[in-house]
Image (cartoon, chains in turn blue, purple):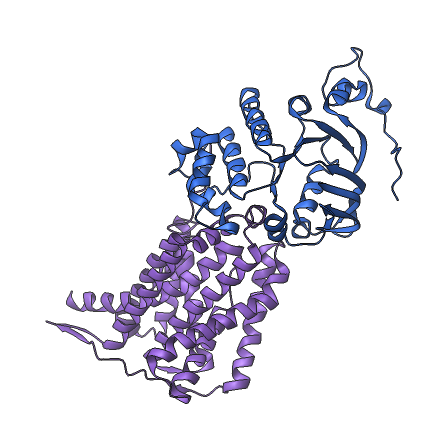
Length: 261
Length: 294
């Protein structure tokens, strides 16, 4: 179980992005995190993946625990190798100038062994389109293919927990549906998924539980069904809800009800 | 005509060494987008390390060469650890500026340790002078060319046929992505600097063998600038072609233009050529064609 306790992250020593965020990820579930741009979703994933210092950010308070061990401040590669947490960055984090097959090989770098080839076949099994493209430079693949490649690369690292940052970014709805179906399959095969999304509806449809993040805090949490039914979530993230137009001035800012420590 | 061919041939042999220098700059540029201005100092240090092993300690050549190169790689790694690593994730320009200062610092270190007088440097490699008809190619440049091209090929095999090379190429494209997929970008950068320092040392030893070794020889390293700018900053093949072009250009300028009274034109000619190339192709002859999706 991954648990994040009262995490505060500051960029460049002055920009406070996460203001005491706490959440936990149960093994084997799909956890959905939704929130507007700039709410701190990406920063949260970066912190867990151990990449926050690369972006000149600091964890100034709180802790990140994996099965009780603190993974705060560990190297990104250590977190991946020892705890099986793989972070798929937003906007298709593939290597454009390497071929599709080289991309998969590069992702397997941290665990090079004889099982790389069979694993590659497994990835091709999930994404048959990649097999056809394997000799091509990844930069020439379409957006959907690139996102599939990115997830395929993540699978090459043998993840136990997969953190996906907006996999549907810039993809057609039909591709998104295909992608989310594969994410569901991956989850069914035993991989815990943390799904950060703007596309709240599609994400909550496959998710078990969800959190709503606003200005670096959790403002709402519940099962996917609860969130889908929630009046405010419907209004601000699903675009439905009451018919009459509302001003953002009236938007409800949640106060954190739970207290920590 | 024969004269010209002779000149060009000699130019190519020296050009191969320049190509190796260019390669060293290119791999660092690709990995961290920083230009290594301290290349000349790495060249001198590599040569001196070999000098100590071979001429002072009388270790046989076959042992002294790999040992010297490994020491040079260790120096490269050390320098990376101390000066470049803390800058990972920052703007590449800050690394470039660090290498400028590093150049001065290393030059002072060399001067402190070995002084600034000239050391005679003669490898006494087997004589393989080629004399066919009217052509004459001296043994030393041929050895230099062979060793340079051998090193070049080994580096390319390393980069394109091993998993370490794959990791280096991935990191070269994007450090953050590499980090996210479990490639330790910090360690990869260390490897790249060590590899670069090692290749520079090969070039340095070959260049020292043409004449003598002294601290001022570092300026030869700057010959890498026209090489990589002509070939393209991020192209390995470009470094090879650029190196050969610069070598030939220098040889031709030395043989045909200098006798007209323009002493020292040999050293300027590559830069004039560079200017011409940049007018026509600002990214260099083989600079990356950016992938554009439509």
